[in-house]
Image (tube, rainbow, N blue to C red):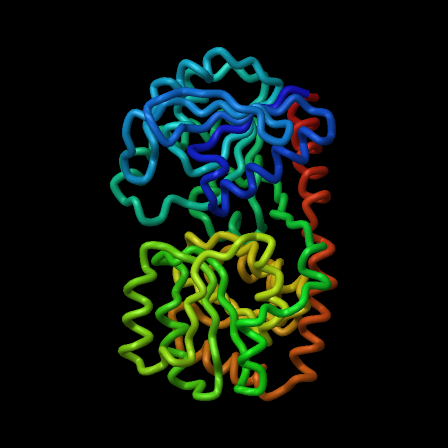
Length: 366
Protein backbone atom coordinates (compact mmCIF):
# COMPACT_ATOMS: atom_id res chain seq x y z
CA UNK A 1 0.00 0.00 0.00
CA UNK A 2 1.22 3.51 -0.79
CA UNK A 3 0.70 5.76 2.24
CA UNK A 4 1.30 9.49 2.51
CA UNK A 5 1.32 11.23 5.92
CA UNK A 6 0.80 14.97 5.92
CA UNK A 7 1.70 17.30 8.77
CA UNK A 8 3.70 20.47 9.43
CA UNK A 9 6.88 19.04 11.03
CA UNK A 10 8.82 15.79 11.33
CA UNK A 11 11.94 14.54 13.06
CA UNK A 12 14.32 16.08 14.14
CA UNK A 13 11.52 18.37 15.36
CA UNK A 14 10.27 16.77 18.58
CA UNK A 15 6.66 16.95 19.76
CA UNK A 16 3.67 14.77 20.54
CA UNK A 17 2.23 14.64 17.01
CA UNK A 18 5.66 14.64 15.37
CA UNK A 19 6.71 11.64 17.49
CA UNK A 20 3.45 9.85 16.66
CA UNK A 21 3.81 10.37 12.91
CA UNK A 22 7.41 9.15 12.98
CA UNK A 23 6.55 6.04 14.98
CA UNK A 24 3.54 5.21 12.81
CA UNK A 25 5.35 5.81 9.52
CA UNK A 26 8.41 3.76 10.48
CA UNK A 27 6.34 0.81 11.66
CA UNK A 28 4.21 0.93 8.52
CA UNK A 29 7.36 0.90 6.39
CA UNK A 30 8.67 -2.07 8.38
CA UNK A 31 5.44 -3.90 7.54
CA UNK A 32 6.22 -3.55 3.83
CA UNK A 33 4.22 -0.46 2.87
CA UNK A 34 5.62 2.34 0.69
CA UNK A 35 5.44 5.21 3.16
CA UNK A 36 6.07 8.89 2.49
CA UNK A 37 5.73 11.87 4.81
CA UNK A 38 5.14 15.39 3.49
CA UNK A 39 6.03 18.22 5.87
CA UNK A 40 7.57 21.67 5.75
CA UNK A 41 11.29 22.27 6.04
CA UNK A 42 12.83 24.60 8.61
CA UNK A 43 14.04 26.92 5.85
CA UNK A 44 13.18 28.04 2.31
CA UNK A 45 14.66 24.96 0.62
CA UNK A 46 12.94 21.75 -0.42
CA UNK A 47 14.76 18.46 0.04
CA UNK A 48 13.93 14.76 0.24
CA UNK A 49 15.48 12.25 2.64
CA UNK A 50 14.97 8.58 3.44
CA UNK A 51 14.88 8.11 7.22
CA UNK A 52 14.53 4.59 8.64
CA UNK A 53 12.75 3.38 5.52
CA UNK A 54 10.44 6.40 5.26
CA UNK A 55 10.65 8.85 2.35
CA UNK A 56 10.35 12.32 3.86
CA UNK A 57 9.65 15.36 1.69
CA UNK A 58 10.63 18.58 3.44
CA UNK A 59 8.86 21.30 1.43
CA UNK A 60 10.29 24.82 1.50
CA UNK A 61 8.67 26.98 4.17
CA UNK A 62 7.54 30.44 3.09
CA UNK A 63 6.30 31.80 6.43
CA UNK A 64 4.57 30.80 9.67
CA UNK A 65 1.11 32.07 10.65
CA UNK A 66 -0.40 31.23 14.07
CA UNK A 67 2.02 28.31 14.51
CA UNK A 68 1.06 26.95 11.07
CA UNK A 69 3.85 26.86 8.44
CA UNK A 70 2.85 28.18 5.00
CA UNK A 71 4.46 26.42 2.05
CA UNK A 72 3.70 26.79 -1.66
CA UNK A 73 6.18 23.99 -2.32
CA UNK A 74 4.03 21.67 -0.20
CA UNK A 75 1.10 22.26 -2.57
CA UNK A 76 3.25 21.40 -5.59
CA UNK A 77 4.68 18.30 -3.94
CA UNK A 78 1.26 17.10 -2.86
CA UNK A 79 -0.17 17.48 -6.38
CA UNK A 80 2.52 15.09 -7.67
CA UNK A 81 1.74 12.32 -5.15
CA UNK A 82 -0.73 9.51 -5.95
CA UNK A 83 -1.00 7.49 -2.71
CA UNK A 84 -3.61 4.87 -1.96
CA UNK A 85 -4.23 6.63 1.35
CA UNK A 86 -3.41 10.17 2.45
CA UNK A 87 -3.26 10.34 6.24
CA UNK A 88 -3.61 13.88 7.61
CA UNK A 89 -2.78 14.86 11.18
CA UNK A 90 -5.08 17.59 12.51
CA UNK A 91 -4.71 20.43 13.36
CA UNK A 92 -2.67 21.82 10.49
CA UNK A 93 -5.03 24.02 8.42
CA UNK A 94 -2.58 24.60 5.55
CA UNK A 95 -2.02 20.89 5.09
CA UNK A 96 -5.70 20.02 5.35
CA UNK A 97 -6.69 22.63 2.78
CA UNK A 98 -3.83 21.51 0.54
CA UNK A 99 -5.16 17.95 0.54
CA UNK A 100 -8.74 19.17 0.07
CA UNK A 101 -7.95 21.22 -3.03
CA UNK A 102 -4.79 19.64 -4.49
CA UNK A 103 -4.58 16.10 -3.12
CA UNK A 104 -4.78 13.12 -5.49
CA UNK A 105 -5.07 10.28 -2.97
CA UNK A 106 -7.61 7.55 -3.60
CA UNK A 107 -8.77 7.73 0.02
CA UNK A 108 -8.22 10.24 2.83
CA UNK A 109 -8.00 9.56 6.57
CA UNK A 110 -7.48 12.20 9.23
CA UNK A 111 -6.30 11.72 12.80
CA UNK A 112 -7.99 14.40 14.88
CA UNK A 113 -5.37 14.92 17.56
CA UNK A 114 -6.91 18.00 19.18
CA UNK A 115 -9.38 20.84 18.74
CA UNK A 116 -7.87 24.17 17.74
CA UNK A 117 -7.70 25.73 21.20
CA UNK A 118 -5.57 28.83 21.55
CA UNK A 119 -5.39 30.25 18.02
CA UNK A 120 -8.78 31.96 18.16
CA UNK A 121 -8.28 33.88 14.92
CA UNK A 122 -7.35 30.71 13.03
CA UNK A 123 -10.22 28.81 14.61
CA UNK A 124 -12.86 31.36 13.60
CA UNK A 125 -11.44 32.05 10.13
CA UNK A 126 -10.83 28.39 9.31
CA UNK A 127 -14.08 26.96 10.72
CA UNK A 128 -16.22 26.96 7.51
CA UNK A 129 -13.47 25.33 5.47
CA UNK A 130 -12.61 22.96 8.31
CA UNK A 131 -16.13 21.54 8.25
CA UNK A 132 -15.85 21.03 4.48
CA UNK A 133 -12.55 19.19 4.97
CA UNK A 134 -13.94 16.92 7.68
CA UNK A 135 -17.11 16.22 5.72
CA UNK A 136 -15.09 15.09 2.72
CA UNK A 137 -12.53 12.75 4.33
CA UNK A 138 -13.34 9.06 4.34
CA UNK A 139 -12.66 8.43 8.03
CA UNK A 140 -11.75 10.42 11.15
CA UNK A 141 -9.53 8.75 13.73
CA UNK A 142 -9.94 9.98 17.31
CA UNK A 143 -7.46 8.90 19.95
CA UNK A 144 -10.09 8.34 22.64
CA UNK A 145 -13.87 8.02 22.95
CA UNK A 146 -13.74 10.89 25.45
CA UNK A 147 -12.62 13.31 22.77
CA UNK A 148 -15.46 12.37 20.42
CA UNK A 149 -17.97 13.00 23.20
CA UNK A 150 -16.48 16.29 24.37
CA UNK A 151 -15.40 17.92 21.10
CA UNK A 152 -18.11 20.12 19.59
CA UNK A 153 -16.47 19.54 16.22
CA UNK A 154 -16.26 15.75 16.39
CA UNK A 155 -19.82 15.50 17.67
CA UNK A 156 -20.93 16.68 14.22
CA UNK A 157 -19.00 13.87 12.53
CA UNK A 158 -19.39 11.08 15.08
CA UNK A 159 -20.76 8.67 12.47
CA UNK A 160 -17.46 8.64 10.57
CA UNK A 161 -15.21 8.57 13.64
CA UNK A 162 -13.29 5.53 14.84
CA UNK A 163 -11.16 5.31 17.98
CA UNK A 164 -7.52 4.28 17.65
CA UNK A 165 -5.59 5.10 20.84
CA UNK A 166 -1.99 6.23 20.64
CA UNK A 167 0.57 3.58 21.48
CA UNK A 168 4.09 3.21 22.85
CA UNK A 169 6.83 0.61 23.03
CA UNK A 170 6.72 -0.19 26.77
CA UNK A 171 9.92 -2.27 26.76
CA UNK A 172 12.42 0.48 27.76
CA UNK A 173 10.32 1.41 30.79
CA UNK A 174 9.83 -2.07 32.22
CA UNK A 175 13.23 -2.76 33.76
CA UNK A 176 15.08 0.55 33.82
CA UNK A 177 17.18 1.55 36.83
CA UNK A 178 16.67 4.92 38.57
CA UNK A 179 18.71 7.93 37.49
CA UNK A 180 21.46 8.95 39.98
CA UNK A 181 19.90 12.44 40.25
CA UNK A 182 16.73 11.00 41.71
CA UNK A 183 18.49 8.37 43.79
CA UNK A 184 20.04 11.20 45.79
CA UNK A 185 16.53 12.17 46.92
CA UNK A 186 15.63 8.77 48.41
CA UNK A 187 14.35 9.00 51.93
CA UNK A 188 13.53 12.71 51.60
CA UNK A 189 9.80 12.40 50.95
CA UNK A 190 7.63 11.34 48.05
CA UNK A 191 9.34 11.80 44.68
CA UNK A 192 7.14 13.32 41.98
CA UNK A 193 7.86 13.45 38.26
CA UNK A 194 6.54 15.55 35.40
CA UNK A 195 7.61 14.98 31.78
CA UNK A 196 6.60 17.21 28.89
CA UNK A 197 7.14 20.40 26.95
CA UNK A 198 6.85 23.44 29.20
CA UNK A 199 3.86 25.01 27.48
CA UNK A 200 0.92 26.97 28.84
CA UNK A 201 -1.54 24.07 28.82
CA UNK A 202 0.64 21.74 30.92
CA UNK A 203 -0.58 23.41 34.13
CA UNK A 204 2.72 23.19 35.98
CA UNK A 205 1.84 26.35 37.89
CA UNK A 206 -0.89 24.38 39.66
CA UNK A 207 1.52 21.57 40.54
CA UNK A 208 4.03 24.09 41.90
CA UNK A 209 1.27 25.62 44.02
CA UNK A 210 0.37 22.11 45.23
CA UNK A 211 3.99 21.64 46.32
CA UNK A 212 3.37 24.35 48.90
CA UNK A 213 0.87 21.96 50.56
CA UNK A 214 3.30 19.02 50.32
CA UNK A 215 6.30 20.05 52.44
CA UNK A 216 7.96 16.62 52.21
CA UNK A 217 7.52 16.16 48.45
CA UNK A 218 10.24 16.60 45.86
CA UNK A 219 9.52 17.21 42.20
CA UNK A 220 11.62 16.59 39.10
CA UNK A 221 10.49 18.39 35.93
CA UNK A 222 11.80 16.93 32.67
CA UNK A 223 11.39 19.10 29.60
CA UNK A 224 11.93 22.57 28.21
CA UNK A 225 9.77 25.17 26.56
CA UNK A 226 8.47 28.74 26.49
CA UNK A 227 7.11 28.63 30.06
CA UNK A 228 10.35 27.39 31.60
CA UNK A 229 11.59 30.77 32.83
CA UNK A 230 8.21 31.81 34.25
CA UNK A 231 7.74 28.53 36.11
CA UNK A 232 11.24 28.64 37.57
CA UNK A 233 10.43 32.13 38.84
CA UNK A 234 7.13 30.88 40.28
CA UNK A 235 8.89 28.07 42.15
CA UNK A 236 11.15 30.68 43.77
CA UNK A 237 8.21 32.96 44.54
CA UNK A 238 6.35 30.09 46.24
CA UNK A 239 9.43 29.11 48.21
CA UNK A 240 9.51 25.55 46.83
CA UNK A 241 12.50 25.92 44.50
CA UNK A 242 14.82 23.92 46.78
CA UNK A 243 12.52 20.93 46.37
CA UNK A 244 11.99 21.32 42.61
CA UNK A 245 14.56 20.22 40.04
CA UNK A 246 14.26 21.47 36.47
CA UNK A 247 16.16 18.74 34.64
CA UNK A 248 15.70 20.25 31.17
CA UNK A 249 15.49 18.14 28.06
CA UNK A 250 16.46 14.50 28.53
CA UNK A 251 17.48 12.07 25.78
CA UNK A 252 15.01 9.29 25.04
CA UNK A 253 17.48 6.68 26.21
CA UNK A 254 17.81 8.34 29.62
CA UNK A 255 14.11 9.03 30.18
CA UNK A 256 13.10 5.56 31.53
CA UNK A 257 15.50 6.04 34.46
CA UNK A 258 13.59 9.13 35.57
CA UNK A 259 10.32 7.21 35.60
CA UNK A 260 11.97 4.37 37.53
CA UNK A 261 13.16 6.78 40.22
CA UNK A 262 9.84 8.49 40.96
CA UNK A 263 7.06 7.40 43.30
CA UNK A 264 4.21 9.23 41.57
CA UNK A 265 3.86 10.67 38.06
CA UNK A 266 1.83 13.86 37.76
CA UNK A 267 0.24 15.35 34.63
CA UNK A 268 -1.44 18.59 35.87
CA UNK A 269 -2.61 19.84 32.45
CA UNK A 270 -5.06 22.72 32.46
CA UNK A 271 -6.43 22.92 28.89
CA UNK A 272 -7.90 20.61 26.24
CA UNK A 273 -4.72 20.96 24.21
CA UNK A 274 -3.63 17.98 26.34
CA UNK A 275 -5.62 15.58 24.21
CA UNK A 276 -4.20 12.21 25.34
CA UNK A 277 -1.07 12.25 27.49
CA UNK A 278 1.27 9.57 26.13
CA UNK A 279 3.61 10.24 29.06
CA UNK A 280 1.03 8.61 31.30
CA UNK A 281 1.53 5.36 29.37
CA UNK A 282 5.28 5.61 29.90
CA UNK A 283 4.77 6.09 33.63
CA UNK A 284 2.36 3.15 33.77
CA UNK A 285 4.82 0.94 31.90
CA UNK A 286 7.32 1.80 34.64
CA UNK A 287 4.76 0.66 37.22
CA UNK A 288 4.06 4.12 38.65
CA UNK A 289 0.68 5.50 39.77
CA UNK A 290 -0.51 8.58 37.89
CA UNK A 291 -2.30 11.73 39.00
CA UNK A 292 -3.85 13.63 36.11
CA UNK A 293 -6.62 16.18 35.53
CA UNK A 294 -10.09 15.85 34.03
CA UNK A 295 -10.23 17.76 30.75
CA UNK A 296 -12.85 15.76 28.88
CA UNK A 297 -10.02 14.38 26.75
CA UNK A 298 -7.95 11.22 26.64
CA UNK A 299 -6.13 11.93 29.92
CA UNK A 300 -8.90 10.25 31.93
CA UNK A 301 -9.33 7.54 29.29
CA UNK A 302 -5.73 6.44 29.73
CA UNK A 303 -5.62 6.93 33.51
CA UNK A 304 -8.86 5.54 34.93
CA UNK A 305 -9.65 7.20 38.25
CA UNK A 306 -9.13 4.86 41.20
CA UNK A 307 -7.69 2.09 39.03
CA UNK A 308 -4.28 3.28 37.81
CA UNK A 309 -4.14 6.50 39.82
CA UNK A 310 -6.35 9.49 40.46
CA UNK A 311 -8.09 11.99 38.20
CA UNK A 312 -8.72 15.39 39.79
CA UNK A 313 -10.40 18.60 38.59
CA UNK A 314 -8.25 20.75 36.31
CA UNK A 315 -6.77 24.03 37.55
CA UNK A 316 -7.15 22.97 41.21
CA UNK A 317 -3.87 22.87 43.12
CA UNK A 318 -5.54 21.72 46.33
CA UNK A 319 -7.08 18.70 44.56
CA UNK A 320 -3.67 17.82 43.13
CA UNK A 321 -2.08 18.10 46.57
CA UNK A 322 -4.78 15.92 48.17
CA UNK A 323 -4.39 13.13 45.61
CA UNK A 324 -0.59 13.20 45.85
CA UNK A 325 -0.73 13.23 49.67
CA UNK A 326 -2.98 10.16 49.67
CA UNK A 327 -0.50 8.28 47.49
CA UNK A 328 2.52 9.49 49.43
CA UNK A 329 1.11 8.06 52.65
CA UNK A 330 0.25 4.61 51.28
CA UNK A 331 3.02 2.57 49.65
CA UNK A 332 0.71 -0.43 49.21
CA UNK A 333 -1.78 1.72 47.30
CA UNK A 334 1.00 3.03 45.07
CA UNK A 335 2.12 -0.50 44.32
CA UNK A 336 -1.42 -1.71 43.53
CA UNK A 337 -2.22 1.20 41.21
CA UNK A 338 1.19 0.94 39.56
CA UNK A 339 0.68 -2.76 38.84
CA UNK A 340 -2.76 -2.05 37.35
CA UNK A 341 -1.26 0.65 35.14
CA UNK A 342 1.45 -1.68 33.89
CA UNK A 343 -1.24 -4.19 32.93
CA UNK A 344 -3.30 -1.51 31.15
CA UNK A 345 -0.36 -0.49 28.97
CA UNK A 346 -0.75 -3.78 27.12
CA UNK A 347 -3.82 -2.22 25.49
CA UNK A 348 -1.75 0.70 24.16
CA UNK A 349 1.22 -0.86 22.38
CA UNK A 350 2.53 0.59 19.15
CA UNK A 351 1.89 -2.76 17.44
CA UNK A 352 -1.82 -2.60 18.28
CA UNK A 353 -2.00 1.02 17.15
CA UNK A 354 -0.39 0.24 13.79
CA UNK A 355 -2.66 -2.76 13.22
CA UNK A 356 -5.78 -0.72 14.00
CA UNK A 357 -4.72 2.13 11.70
CA UNK A 358 -4.06 -0.35 8.91
CA UNK A 359 -7.54 -1.78 9.41
CA UNK A 360 -8.97 1.74 9.00
CA UNK A 361 -7.10 2.03 5.70
CA UNK A 362 -8.44 -1.30 4.51
CA UNK A 363 -11.99 -0.38 5.51
CA UNK A 364 -12.00 2.86 3.54
CA UNK A 365 -10.49 1.16 0.48
CA UNK A 366 -13.21 -1.50 0.25
